[in-house]
Structures are given as C-alpha cells and as structure tokens.
Image (tube, rainbow, N blue to C red):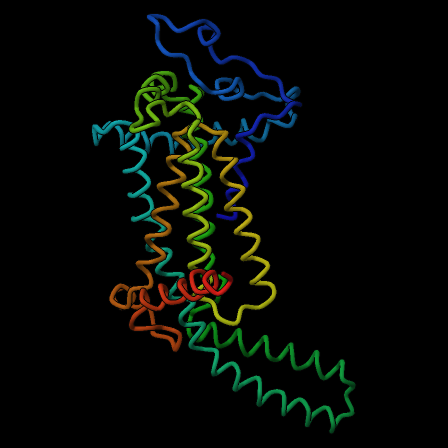
Length: 340
C-alpha cells in the first residue's frame, strides 16, 4: 500500500510532449461509437523531449518485459475464461493473490512468529550480557562509551546467531513486499497500456473491448469513474486494512505510530489519485485491496495458521475475530459515545 504512491506516473507532466498514438484517435469514431471520456494524456503516449528526458524512464518501464508479461497474463485470462474484461481483471487479481501473495504472506507470518517466540530468550541474553559487560568494564577500567559499544556489538552477534539457528532472520519477512510491489506496478501499467491503446499486443483491439467491458455504473473501463465510487472504495478498504493492523499492535513505538499515520495518509491520498486513472486500473486496485483485506483476516484464523504450520505465540488468541470486533468497538464506537 505504501508503494502505491508510485502511480504518480499516471498523472500528466507539463514538461513532456504528447503525441497521438494513431491519427485515427484524433478523429471522431466511425459509426457513431462513443468517444473516450479520458483526458488527453490518457489517450496519448508520453515521450520525453530528449532521449534522456523526464519521460524516458516510464517509456522504458511501459515497454519492459515484465509489463508485457502482465499484458499476456491478462489476455490469457480473458481468452481462456471467456469473461468480460471486468471479470477477467477480477479473476486475474484473485488468481495472482491466491497463488503468489497468500503463500508469501503465510511465510511472512511464519517468520514473524518465530522471531516473536525468540524474544524471551533474547531478553534473557541481554540481561546476562549486561551484567557481564558491567563486571568486565569495572575490571578493565572501560569507559561508559566503550562498555556500551562492546555490549551492542556482542548483542548483535548473539541475536544474529539465534536467527541463524532458527532460520528466521526478520529480513525474510520482507519478501512479500519485494514480490507484491513490482507485481502491482506491472499489472497497473499493463492495464494502463490496454486502456490507452499503447499495448504491444492487440493494444487497440483490447482498448475497444474495454470501452464496453465494464459492469454496473462503470461500463467503459477506459474512462474515469465520474461517480468516485471505485476510488472511494479503494481508499476505504485500504484504511480498513491499516486500522485492523493498528488494532492488533499493542504498545506501539513512536516510529510505528508515525508509520501508521503515514499509511493512513497514503490511503486517503489514493482516492484522488484513483479518480484520475482509467476505471480498469481502479478496478484492479479495488480487487487487490479487497483480497489483501481477506488475506489479512484469513491469516488470523487459528485453523488456517495451524494448516500453514505457523508457530503459536503468546499473542495468539483462540477468538481473534471477536477480539478484533471488541477492539474496534472500544476504539471507535465507545469513544464516540463518550464524546457525546
């Protein structure tokens, strides 16, 4: 979610030149077809003034192999399923989230649970090491600075040995971010290419299909959602994910509090950003966020955690969903009633 600020590439930049992809786009569509409701920048390809201009990095990214791979995945899902494009986007998102990010999320929880179970041992080592360093400092006449540095260096080494022993270095828990973030970016750019006709494979034919491939109030997936229902839904679901994460963390540090407020701000900022991109992209963001929320709740289930062989910790509860509702009620509803 933090990374979603990367969608700034979707916004127009005044320093860039715009060239129409196809001269036919400048003319009214034949047969009385409905013209796109997107702004000029959304039906044009962005090119830099020079070879190394401001738009060069995005052009390279939009034509890169990973983005073309994402286009192929979307085309395959659409062809194989026979669903309209809104269904194909939904199906692709669910499939990628279920096959890629869910196992990685379970692995992340597995690593974090092992790290959590090491905390009593780490605290015990820290207590004994502090006593040993104090004795050694008194014997050798170390200054407070030397004693402190010796303690920190030795403590880092001992903790690192514990991580190696249990094969649970915290950095392994970040693998989800390194996979999910690029996948989110590549899929978003692929849908942008389809929506603007800039895709390398069947770009314009897909663009025409997307104009009638929506459902409900967003029939044209190449147009903006003028009702703001999709953008607001994206922001609300992302905020809900943040609040669920915040409710489960007790005794947060100042840094964690700052990060929570920052992610909240990003979630709110996603609303106006989502209102400026084609509905196909916003639909993907909405489906991805909803799957993220579902996975977050699923990974709280004791049965599912047991199925994934995630170790039990002292913070685990037998009734996680009741506890979550109680915490939500206490933080938001009870506080509001006391205010009045």
